[in-house]
Every structure is written in C-alpha cells, then in structure tokens.
Length: 428
Image 1 (tube, helix red, strand yellow):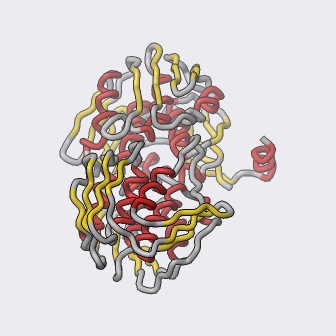
Image 2 (tube, one colour):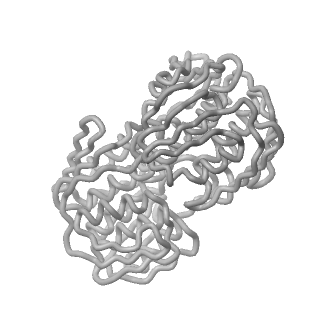
Image 3 (cartoon, rainbow, N blue to C red):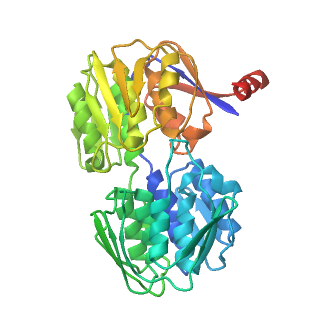
C-alpha cells in the first residue's frame, strides 16, 4: 500500500496536458463489446478503472490489447458470462456491462456495482429502461439477472436526469427492433462521446447532447476507431490546483466550453482565466473572493468538482457556501480538511467554508476519488508535508498525477506504508 506525500508552498507554473475522459472511457469500453469486429479507442487515460474493465471483458471471452494510450477490443469470442461479483464491486461504471451485454446477447448477469460511497445512488432508472425495452430484471443473491426474448424500441421518460441511465439505455436500445425515444435524457459531453462511437459502429442515434435522444435499432454493429474527448473533470481539477497554488499555469488539450461553469466561478473569485481554442490559462491572485456554488447537471457546476473546490474556498477572504444537489453524502472530504486546519460547517447538502484559513500539513485519508483530489488541492496550499493514504481512490481517476504535478513544480512523491501504519488504518 502506498501513501502520497505533498510538500506545500511550492508555486505551480508551466503547462499540463489533460488525458482522455475517465467518465467517457468507462462507458466506451463496454460499448465497444457490442461490435462484431475489433474496436480501437485512442486517448485512453492510464487509470486503474480501465484495467478493471479490461479484466471484466476478458472474463467474458474478449481479447484486449493496450499500447500506450490506445486500447483495442476483439469481441469475436465473447459470450454472456455471468459477472456476479469480484471485479464488478471495484467500480460503479461496471453497470454499463448490463446495457451492453443485454443489447448484444439479450441477457446478462451482473453484480450490483461498486465505486465510491457517495450515498444512495439507485439504478432504478436503468432497470426501468431495460424493462421498457422488453427485458425481465430480477435481483437474486446480490446480482441482477436480465433476460429478454427480444428487445423492442420504446418511449422511455427518465424520472431523474441520469448520465448512467441515459448511456445504459442507449447501449441496450441500439440493436433493439424499432425506435427508442429517451426523454429527459442527460446532456453531458460523455453521452455525446458514447453516441459518436456507437454511430461510427453503425448505430442510428439522433439528439445526443439534448434532453431527447432518438434511436433506430440496427441489426449489426461493426468495429471502428475512436478518440476519447478530453477529461473535463481532470481539466477542472488542474484549474483548481492552479488557482490554489499556481502562479501561471496553462491547461492544454481541453474543450473550454466543457469547463465554463468552473471558469465563471474562478473569475468571480478573482482568478485570471483566459480560454483559448483547446486550452485555458490560469493566473492566480493572492487575494481570492468568496463565492457561493451550487452543483447541477451539465452544463451546470459539476458535482465531481465540488470536493476539490471546497478545499480551494478555504483560501478565499470570507465565507463561501457550496451546495451539492446531486449527491447527499459528498462532503466526506470535510473531516479530513479539518485535520489540516480548515473551518467548515456541513448542514445537509450544504457546506459553509470559512476563510481565509492557513492549512497545515497532516496525515489524512482519501475517502473517495474526488475527495482525494480535494486533499491534493489542500496539500499544495498547506504549510509542511501532507500525507494522504488510500491513494487507490485517486488512481481510479487521475492519470500520471505525480508526474504532471512535478512538471509544474510541485514537490510530491509516494512511499510505501509501514506495517504499523497499515495496522493503524485498519483499526481506525
């Protein structure tokens, strides 16, 4: 087991290149299994979730090949292998295997998904969509059994805007007979990315990126090559790093429109944000103004950026309020930030951040992926050395984090945990 150590107080300067979108990649790889021939996906991030998905696919008979940032899936020998537990428990995005395998084989057995514990995240909208398409869904011994004699297009209204449900229903519907209409669909860029891959494979999809998606079922899908969009959450995280501890930082290989909600809030705080065609330049200021933030579905402020921006707000001169309307248990980073001297009060879905607070290096634990990013943000600002354990959460979503931050001038490294430290964590 590793721990991540950060010596704060070193200003960030230079350029960082953003990797492919994690939230796209974990849906694109299951989507690729629906093809009859090989699919190659480029600009793939080097994160642990991708390795888990690759192992899941190989369990089901696929052959996978990874070369640099390219991933090729050979699905010719795949079969509807039950995937009841084990690897499925390691990431929430394993639920995309439901829609993909149901769409390809008309049946699937998938364990209930894992991932970060952010409070209740039901998959009832996914199941509602599968059933509307003609599948029978049962829950037996902690696994979902999906079976359909034939999938038929249907009109499906999502009661809650859900990225996962929108993508999963798309996957199940692209080979269903007839037309499927998904109403109140999510609009995130990752949905457009998945729809682009499926269209290149031969699917007929219109309206991706709007709240109504129309799909005409096709009989077969062929292999293709696809490049993943830049990761807007990684881009936003580095923008926050730069605002917290930078002097002059350029975030390259991004789509500025995808991070406009964050850019607007950073400008409101007094941070210099200059957008180019495929980059954003950040010029931070010593004095930052407090702001109020409310997370919303895209194109609103991303819930995945709530945790790192909470750490940044400790640097503002005054009190800021941040409200997360998406997840009701996404302030687990607050207890760890308090260990570093932050003054934050949580009340339900909102947190009141009192600034300006001088953070001190401390021993803290990453409770989840974006919570880990919050601690890295704090560590870059803090006086002294911050030690972060449970780094595997961070590795799930940030490719080459230490290398990228070192290139910007951060002092950051990893060490093996001692037996005593491991025992202390297990007993806590």
